[in-house]
Image (cartoon, rainbow, N blue to C red):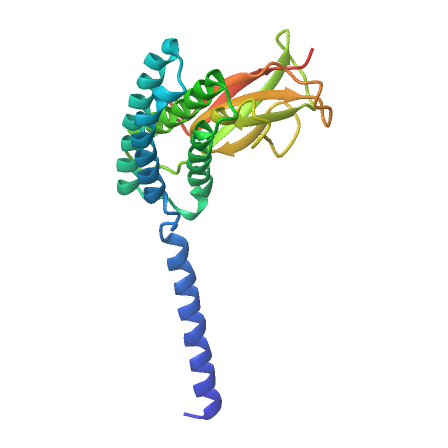
Length: 235
């Protein structure tokens, strides 16, 4: 065999190996350390259980204890589901949303917030974890943890077009952080989000003062791959 033919065969072999390798990587579960994150959250709640009496008012303690128990149950459900059906590369937003929940919980350790604000954050995080756990409980086939959210903006029942649609993880509502908008204006407008609890609202483009009433939205809680919502348009 000539040197030219040998070189061609080698080049073809390298291309084949490269292609197979890229396909293999694309099909491998993403290394997002989600299991470690959930483990850290469980540990955090264990420490928090010892600490909540220091800041919760007497009339808040029962609620806080109940939220703790709900969160632990939800985290365990999510952890079991992820161990069974691994996260993939296109599900990084799911892992990111869990990280945002953990970051929100850490706000409870600061002395800057009043107890009422801390209870609100805790409630928002627990609602998010419960929505994820509900999705996982119905996700027996291991479907992707990506939900298509379709939003229509309306005023008195009539569609109002060309508005922005905004959302924030419920645990971060009212903080002014982690607010995002759907990629395109219009009604309907759609965006892909991980299962969870959000606050959503409409807004006149680039005019933050002209917003519609915020609405709590649970995404994926019913196990469906699609969620449709109506949002009030600004008055």
